[in-house]
Length: 380
Image 1 (cartoon, helix red, strand yellow):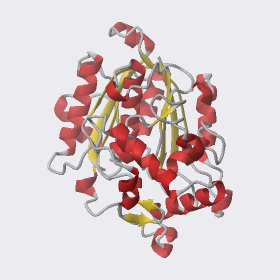
Image 2: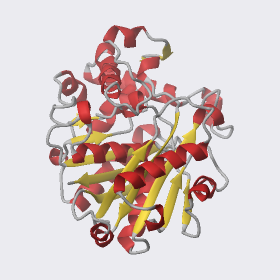
Image 3: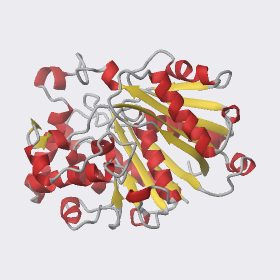
Image 4: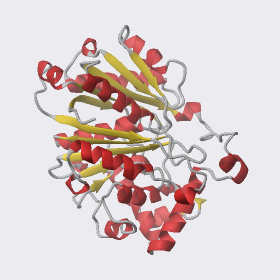
């Protein structure tokens, strides 16, 4: 899918624990902010896609009816942590196919309401229930293996959290607003060795929205130029009962996205990736082709992935700094990419950003690496 679609406007609520705020109110704030950013009326929107992990039962209709978004097609999307990214991709696909002129992609979740005690175990998952191999354990094993194979240390791993919390402190919509030091990361509570609490993403609440349009509708609505989605690729994990031989989804999907966009990894100025745990940043940097296998940690130590480095990784704070409300995450990544490409990201602005990539991984399906991997390419 290589057609261009314009990002007319984006909006995001502050990500934080806010159980007193209804999901409808969160969605309203994000959609209204996106429409105001686009300079359009809500009546200009002719399709809506709403991604959520925890708010089932017609969440889109529930959240949009009170602001007048009715009668149009409203599609509800659940795809684990890629729910918001899937909503974006569906909005893009409808626009590219001519099924809608102007579509809104929304992500919304309130994890402190729906999951006050954390993510629940799947009773049918033998890894989680039988062996206790929940996500922190899975990523901890990956971190241990990576550090053993390539020589990275606990201090190198902790530096990821320092970078992303520091970026988040420059993002007024991020969950965490205070930078942390290397010593603070290393001294934070051990969750699953070697991952400490500050090296794990935080459950949070919030919403994000993006308004996507055809080039013709963009011109009609006063947006002849700006930020464009130039490619979107999606895939799921391969069924395989031998994890060591898993066909990794990210390299496969990223290659499709780069080919459709007519670019390569060297053309990317910034990436918002799925750093649900610190080790994921190194793994996905390499799988997105931004570093050779086993080299991301050393390049990170040289500043390659800082704002102003070779390619800025998670300038908005990532999942570790911005927070991970699941449903809104992929849409929030698109918001950050849009602000960066416009040059309006303030203190965290990536210099002369022209090409951005967003990347999400959803799910932990038994014997599959992922429910969904989505890579979007944006350009100005």
